[in-house]
Length: 289
Image (cartoon, rainbow, N blue to C red; front, side):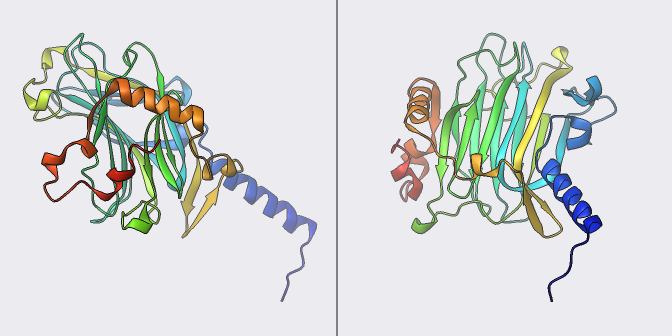
């Protein structure tokens, strides 16, 4: 039976839909969009009325935060300023992840280095618990001198990693070839600053110099233009069509080729020794720009 709609019912429904759109579009205020979940007192701090978040690491503790919301597709972006100076041994991780033994995950990890040496930007994609899809890059700027924008586009067709709106990596949905693709599990945004000197810098050869602590990374302008998961359903922002069907045009593909030709330092698809049974299926498509 169709229900009748009184003016008051219409007003309530309109307010509810407006609130869902607001929820689905994180507005950059960390008080409203994120929770600090790790770190001793003062190691993770929301400041400037919610416009700035800082993580710090010393011998006593690292730190981290997560988004209040979980997402099922979206375009997620954050501005980061990384640990300056001698950051060897430290890792600043910024990623989307689900839970469980067959989790999905989309990773940005920034591997610290000795003063004057470049950061390594480490990327990876996990689908149904399977990773080993590492690609690494140097950056074409000093990521410690100012804030830069790091974005993840995640829609049903592709995952694209962006740095200052320049695509550096695309992982396409190739399920028709048997390659699992993250599309069914909701994911939350996480970021942590932690000590990984057993592997992070030159494979663990360079250890963390604790005399340089506290190490600090800064964040601002978190934006999640996404479908937010709530009570068994997802609610999408009014801007959904702008990213849900987004793909790389000719100009963006040219930008990505420039990055990969000049700044890529490791690609799992070019490491046959690691895969003696043959490179992963998706690698046959990795150079089709």
